[in-house]
Length: 269
Ligand SMILES: Nc1nc(=O)c2c([nH]1)NC[C@@H]1CN(c3ccc(C(=O)N[C@@H](CCC(=O)O)C(=O)O)cc3)CN21
Ligand SMILES: CC(C)C(=O)C(=O)O
Ligand SMILES: [Mg+2]
Image (cartoon, rainbow, N blue to C red; front, side, top):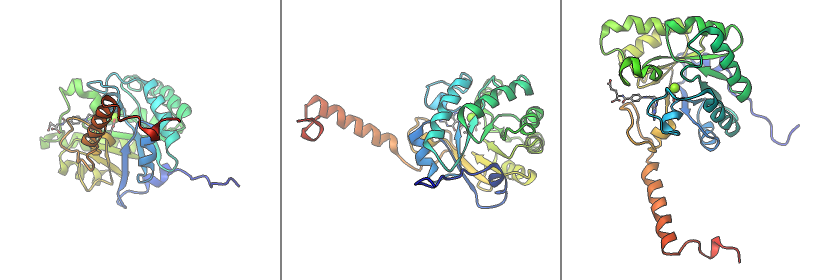
């Protein structure tokens, strides 16, 4: 026996079984220390391709590479021990064919040891999701506002404002679930559409800008901590770390300039 008993991570069937149950708590993390903070409270940690915007300063998620996702995925795996780690497939790494998706998703799985991958798209991605899940790669779906389609959509636009679009959105979620996804992120949709989607699919829905009646919720960690600049309306700032960090950095700068830092405690004598 090891001194510390190994903690088993939350499994795909455990998440899938949470339909209509206690809501699934999910957050993003991109680094080991942030993953450790989230791991204490969440069932799912998503290494989102939002890291391109949040960490790397891109204006969309289009420029994110597989190498970036793997590097951050490895860090998040090292920093966590009980949560399921899900890694976003970046733009261009899975849309071409089921074979391309499998090859790249297998790299993500083998090089990080994560629990699942997530990819954007509804009915058009169903064949690929079936190809992956039937070959041992757990897939989380992502419908509604799909940020990798920002250029074709003309920006980050809330979906389902027009009720005529609802059947297509509901069909997208249903197709993803029926293709074998163990859960599906529902992003940036009208609340009533999110409720219809949650009722229509047999797997848990994880909402972001969706509805409190989804089977779980996710936010970008930096956003809810108050570390991001402008945030979408669906973000609630549960913390206000940005101003506190600014204050700490300003205090450090002043202490350097007036030579009060380093003091006796921080010098070797
Ligand atoms: N920091 C961060 N947080 C996120 O939630 C996030 C990212 N980055 N990057 C990837 C995508 C992009 N996302 C976004 C970005 C902007 C809006 C936004 O500005 N939405 C408008 C909606 C306008 C409308 O109603 O059509 C808003 O005002 O909230 C939404 C989602 C969500 N994801
Ligand atoms: C916002 C979540 C769902 C995401 O896909 C990301 O962080 O990239
Ligand atoms: Mg994403």
